[in-house]
Length: 289
Image 1 (cartoon, helix red, strand yellow):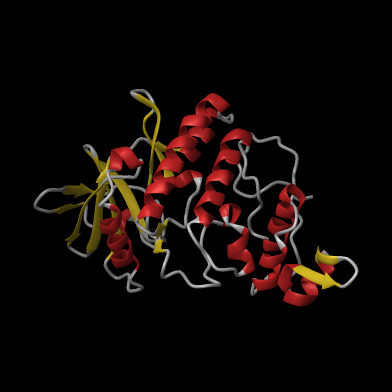
Image 2 (tube, helix red, strand yellow):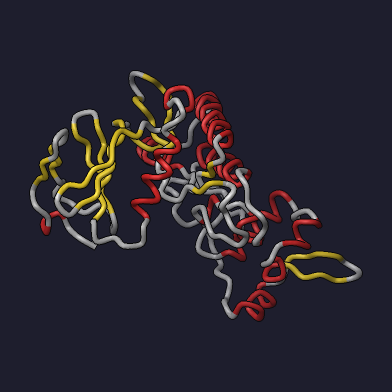
């Protein structure tokens, strides 16, 4: 963790002068607007290869037309002093920020064009074999609400992965936007991003996350309540199926009780009155109770 007061006031590069903000934004990186360019800054001391991976994914995605596919325009990657910097086109605000600022959900008239553009983005990613793996309202940005109402761009490819390299049992996606096949340990494909699209649509319509985070049991319980049990073949092949479900010759598959889940995992399920991470104005009834 670092604070900008610990860093030089600015960095010089052939094409950029990077002035650091005076406040802390995140543990690993910060984003700051420079004229019409946004620069994501990582500490060079990061040794897990995440920066190199993100840049590699962005180079693959750069083959797509950013305007036709509604994907953020990747401009450059460069090193400035002890910082690894990734430059993107400047965008206005995320869907999360929009809902929080308005203090109310979006209308169907507003949600429709956003959804259409997201589907276009993921169709393009599927054609080049890339799973975004981190769709959430924070990672969908408005270009300019005033000049291009509800024109959006998909951002943040730090967790993206080629579909032919994803392994069974891999953990991906924010918890409230995580597809059931991820939780159950099934083979993964671009379909997980489609689940994320549905969850984002629900967030925009209700003003709250549809599924709770923090407790995987209650997330699965909510899914079962809303859309029913997973298909039988998914139950059979999921490496983590028996963590959440049990089989009986008379009743078939059923969701474990909280006590059974605790006995299997050693973790006591949380009782949530409202999905965590929801805007404070939301008054929707809890779907996980």
